[in-house]
Image (cartoon, rainbow, N blue to C red; front, side):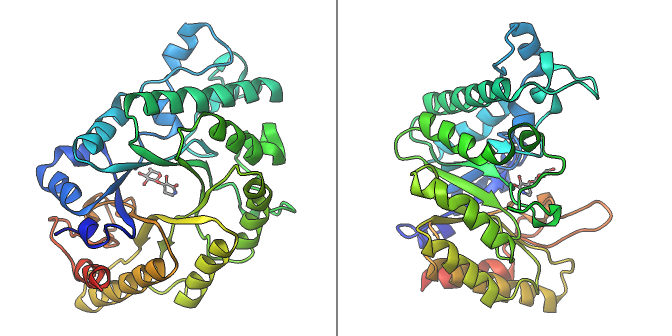
Length: 339
Ligand code: XIL
């Protein structure tokens, strides 16, 4: 029995994967045995699917062209193995090419941006074409979309907490960006697919309040369904009270909750730190189950592929070690899910 079987009926459990990871037999086995949900770590992001040459060649100025071939490797694996997909991510300031925002799709560094009107057409077509492609090719596979990622950044000192720096979407659309994103996504989503806002440091104040005041009017109009708690945690931060409080505050608004990118940045594999990691995982899973979280995704499968592991500084943030062997944290999670 895998983790997915232990929480079947109450919660989906997932991992972020790359096409490369699925080529490795041992790692692919882990994914098949343990997880009921998959997120593409990178290959569904705008920069991975937007095809510059095809776009220029098309001669169209309000519609981006795509290359879904890398994403297809992951989604067909999911389909063939009965695993559901969290689609990540549509609108984001990061990993979205600047040429998407410029007149004539120019790659020149100082190329002027298109008008607001033009960008809205590009935004609508982008969301529509991407959703139609995946929902047509893989009916019933995607259960939710991250529609808007990391829109709130209190450090940027905007009165409503908007991320104003290095954010091409915001510099053209301003505070209307979330409403447009969710309006278009709702228009083209398949019936039953949930629409999520996703962010990190989601448990911190004042970030929590800014997120909630952004989502409330959208929730009232039926445009957003849920809050994605990225949950990139440290071994000793945030405190569990703060984390649980965030979960209950979001839930109290009527938002569905998913933990979308869980990892715990442990930088040592000493016995003590391994033990600490296990304890921390146990607490996070308890908080998730107690808080009604409907899907929990780990940001990677083994420590080897974690985005936190750098060549000169390995990290140990996940449930499986570099050899794909279960760590103490894995058994701690099993124990919680078996209760
Ligand atoms: C990260 C990936 O893990 C890396 O491989 C990539 O180089 C950068 O993006 N928040 C998100 C994720 O929403 O998409 C990010 O993923 C991690 C932070």
